[in-house]
Image (cartoon, rainbow, N blue to C red):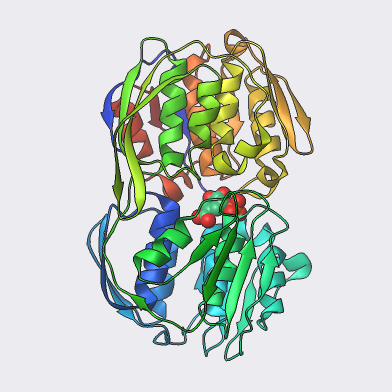
Length: 441
Ligand code: S3P
């Protein structure tokens, strides 16, 4: 159990420029695809956080040589579609749901057996959402009760392509099915009920693997199994999910003017920008260009008076990881903010609706919790008191309360913060560098 505690100091002003660490989703995928490609893949901008390191260690355990030339620069010597070797031990995915779900999709197509394990939080998270479609494809996966990890995967199964409509909007489930589809005997088809991040599709194309999307919103995705991936170079942009903490921080801290550099602005990820703009945030994008098939931009945020909104449900999957900090923006806004259709937040690294509501209550802010969302009365920033918050080992809860500390009447003490290293190494240093009052105690 983590002993790391954060302590905040109010009234900071955020200024200057900052490049936050690399995108977590793309970093995982660069290792997975680089490992099964033919040739050497160079990755720059890699997120050297614990989640992606878990994925890297898993591939090393399966015989892939991955050279880490600097924390953010990798050379992956691909072994080809069928070159992975049986791991000698269980593969530990740590805190990472993405790693476990994507790896399962890949591992069901291998000739060897494997077992995926995770930490306390991951061991409680639902995996039947992936075991169900993968079993339809012919995979054999044993889980604990109610589809919880560990996952025991039987190798050497013949996979059948399926045509699968996702019951929930989840990029992890979509990606698991597509990765299994690489090893299936026909064309795998997936239909999404709402648009989710499309990094798997884009990166597969970058590795010269054909993926076809169709439908009005690109909701039908298909690929033919049995082809091969060719190595390529990948430049991972800064993670918009990490940038989001600073977008809210600079918005709510009067006098702030901050620029975030080289942030990934893939339209399947920019819900946080749309939501904050609807709330009245002053956010401008410049220097927009594409890097390796992914759009990037510099993002300038100046402090602004925010107003409460009804968050459009269509934006929920596009901002799914950013809600903890969006709740902080809502606390500092004028008027009510209502979130609905976000029950997925309850099965993330923690139950993010309840854990945020509990933490806010400890800092003097009452909210109304709903099964699928929350109602937050604005104009409460003045009521944000000092307090002690338990992050429940959830990185994004910890960083959201670090941002709340800017507007609190006194110090916020945030407990159980070690997992900030899963997605944002050096958070305290980088955040303090641009004016957020925070220290590790
Ligand atoms: C991710 C997808 C999202 C997100 C997670 C990363 C991915 O999960 O919450 O942090 O890289 O595919 P779901 O697709 O399950 O919503």
